[in-house]
Amino acid sequence: MKWLYGVATLLVALWLIVTVRASGTESSAGAVFPTVDAVKVLATESGVPNAVTGLILRNRLYDTVFEVVVFSTAILGAKYLLTDEQPTASVAQFSDIPSIVLARVGATISALIAVELAIRGHLTPGGGFAAGVAGGTAIGLIAITASSTWMEQIYTQWRAAMWEKLSVVAFIGVAIVALAGWQLPTGELGALISGGWIPILNILVGIKVALGSWAAILIFIRYRGLL
Image (cartoon, rainbow, N blue to C red; front, side, top):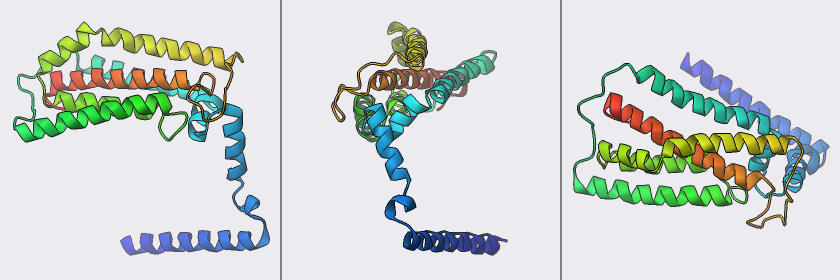
């Protein structure tokens, strides 16, 4: 049956190519690619060059709020489901020096990328979710090279759980204000301080996702012994 799926895929691809070429000869370029105009309008209205970020944090902010809530619920669910289990006695980690050095260098690079994506995610490809994933990757690389006890001590000492909850509350609060119609000035298109609430929402999402990932990493290390 694999050859049948392959033939069907080729036929669909050929049909798309023929359709686009035919429409291109009958209409203008703007009609063939109507999304170009839509992207320009979206960037102008949101005040940020990154139209994807403008869409996520402005036009469909309702969906983004619930995405953040779903992520928070997933972390709480992992804690709830694994609470009754016994913590594992051994943790699988890197032990050779080259792997440890490479992992920590990678963690440093990921952390810097996370900061860049959070701060400039409204200007270039990136954003809060990508920043949080990069931050979580940095924490994961540290976790597989450092003591799990030390990781939990740092997590408790810096009150990461509290900051995670505050970032969620702050994100929802700012989102409600934005959805109510109270907007900050968009500023100059392409400037670092521009886009109204969008840069603030980006940073809050990045903090939430990174700290939530840290919590999930600690949970799975404690009860599974590995990431």
